[in-house]
Image (cartoon, rainbow, N blue to C red; front, top):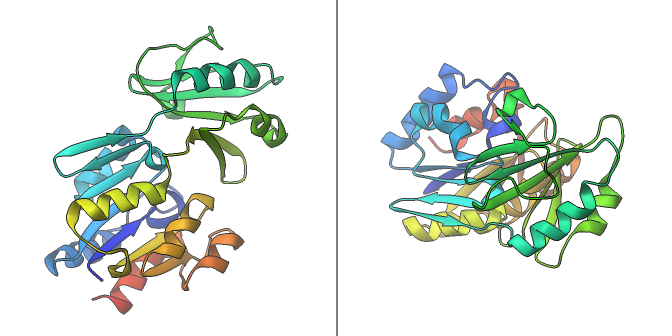
Length: 248
């Protein structure tokens, strides 16, 4: 394999969001062997700075493919302003909905979300900024709102669900697989020469399309079923253990 591509949360990272010394050491050996290291994550770029410092990814797909950081350039796949306006007008009417936006100027939400460092914005459905809109995020305590959100989508957007509860709306161009293809094209590596690690819905397409698709044992059933191999869990350093056993 010429490239290793991995999801971060609940895959490469332990549940407490840490990277073990063992995982860092294994990835360092990959780099010494000339294997490229890349990440594909739902996180924004600012939220992976510490992992980038520890690992030094050659390229990263962030925000599920809404922002792709390549060597020497960045590709952005934001939601069209007209579509964003139409969606926000509908979803803001859902009772007790927790709504937030990931934009080029940071995160905005209708309620405080300290862990995301979100700025509270009371003006929805108006946009809090004129900068690019990468993602609309929605959830509701102890209730499912997927049917209502699905009806609010426009033809150029889609939704996915993370960890069974967090709904994410993005441009149809913003997928992890589109980001991965852009990363591989940028470094001149064929998808058959890559291994991908993941755990959730957004990881199914990369797992199916890369040369080797590996699920961690804590992955959802759909991901495990799509994978070529299931490794140990994220808390057991499953990604690093698979790499050490099979690639080094």
